[in-house]
Length: 445
Image 1 (cartoon, rainbow, N blue to C red):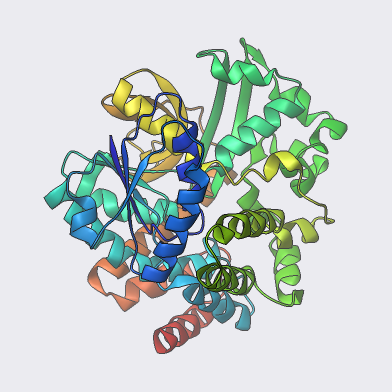
Image 2 (image 1 turned 30 degrees about the vertical axis):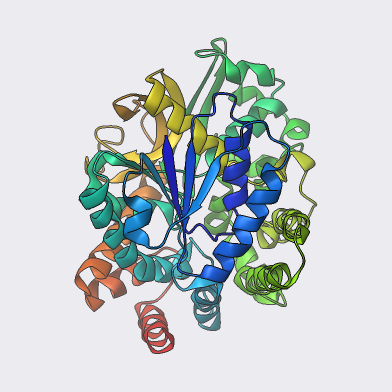
């Protein structure tokens, strides 16, 4: 198979490459990288070259001359772009914070601003894929993943799938805390779970191993809840009230006051930290000698993972992340499992961002949801789920309205739709604030 990564100079690309090197089936024969920043692309290519040293069957890496060159002949396309770079993320986070509302890359006003800037580029990519590689599967890593996948699906239909590592990480951490055998995840049918929502807005509502439901017992065990990230983040009392385990990003919604205070009290935003950290990495790596880039990348990656969601952890008492949460996310493993299922035709269950169909009857069939899917040669098929509680459904409906308004605004350059997307977001508390955020973002673009 030929795999293309758009955003090939991205900091996390070596994680995907590492997964390909460790793939015992050697599914990918050629990896093509494309990026609009040649310096970043060159540095990442050096990291990959050093990472491949000593492997018996290294994957051939090719640097594309342009977007069309990258897409032509591809079997799979990973879209991992960052329109505006980390400097754009800094603006997305700072502008809302200056107005007293949360600034975060995928959540709240910052997520809407990022989507408005990214969707036009994502749509162009989708159109070029349709023209040059119509049989390719597009796997979307680009944030805000649900919103961007929804836009690309208007061109590519079911052949674009959004992925995120947060849900599968939650399932694995919850299973470990409940005493389940980790090897059960490798046996089809042994582990079943009910997870549904939107990207960065979902709930694990059932978890069973060999037909035995584990979630009620876990929710009733304060010590077990305190042993993993989401349990510490939300607290045993609140989780028992919810009767479910929320995605970690729901901390921004359930504890908005505490999280906003933590973010505003920090010396720098997450975007500012990454802008300095990654900018420094690429500068030092480009200036260093052969072989320096890989070791520098590994140190920088670990620091990045250690500080992930630091504001939310600080707002809920503060703690250091466990070693099992520092492996680099898991996007790479989810993507490789998805590729294998699509090619081999074997039945695999994954949590993916796909068209809703009838999973959540209150949403449109073509709305992108994040839920458990059965994946085979014909693509992902979302599985039926239990009815949502009113509070869960209410948040999903409101956030889906925000996402769809943002897609409409980006596609048609509609300021009214953009204002609606910002003002209707539950973390933006005033249409006047939304209007000022939109106006300043336009001026600083």
